[in-house]
Every structure is written in structure tokens, then in C-alpha cells.
Length: 154
Image (cartoon, rainbow, N blue to C red; front, side):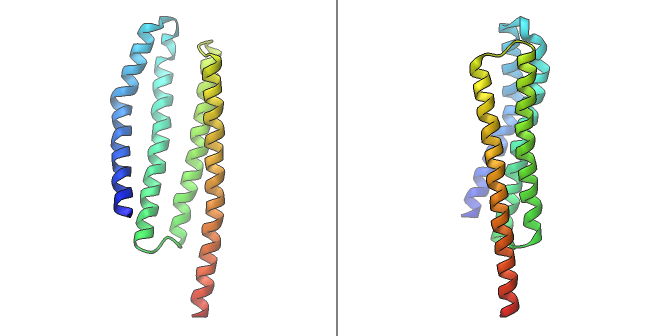
């Protein structure tokens, strides 16, 4: 099962890199050509989109590493907490990228109510996912404590 998940993560990583290299710059150029009054947002838009996707890639790599710990039966170790903490921090960072991007868009008067709504949704989803992972981290900590207690008993 972990091999299938790792294969899917590898495919997602490849698609994300392709999006960063070809799709985002191409879409930004086309948008700048179509709306020249907002052409100054091209470079900040590319930077925000690429950095956001880097956050997604970091989370996927951490999940890959956690899957490796599961496969080697070391998921209940202190190593797992490093990856979980990185996932939490990355999710918060991605939400902040959405906030900053939204501020830039609104300051340039390039936004619409639908962009604001999607941004708010992205922020809420990002924070909710980060909080979910915080809860999962607590469960991992409790499972680690229980495993240590059981190893002392046996």
C-alpha cells in the first residue's frame, strides 16, 4: 500500500514541478497580455503561485518520509514529529501566502468578490488542515507514549 501511495506522490510532485515551470509562467503572461492594466502583478503572481506549490511539495515530501517510517515500523519515533511539525508549519505558511496574495490583489484593485471568497475559503481550509494535523500530532504523541509504556511492561 505504501508503494502505491509513494507512486501517486511522485506523480503529483512531477505534475507540480511541471506547473511551476510551464503552466504558471504561461498563464501569467497570457493574463498580463489580456489585462495590461494589471501587468505589474505578473511577477508577484508567479512568485506567490510557485512558492505556494513549493509548500504543497514540501508537505508531499514529508508524507513520503512518514510513509517510509510506517513501512520500516518506525512511525512511533521522534523522527515522525519532525515531519509532522514541518507539515503544520508549511500549511500555515501556505495560508499566509494566500493572505498576502489577496492583499496585493485587492491593493491593486484587480480582485473581484469571487477572488476574495475563494481566498477566504483557501485560508479557512489551510488553517483547518493545519489544526487537523495538530490533533493528529497529539494522537501520534499519545500512541508513542503507549508504545513506550507497553515496551516497559513486556
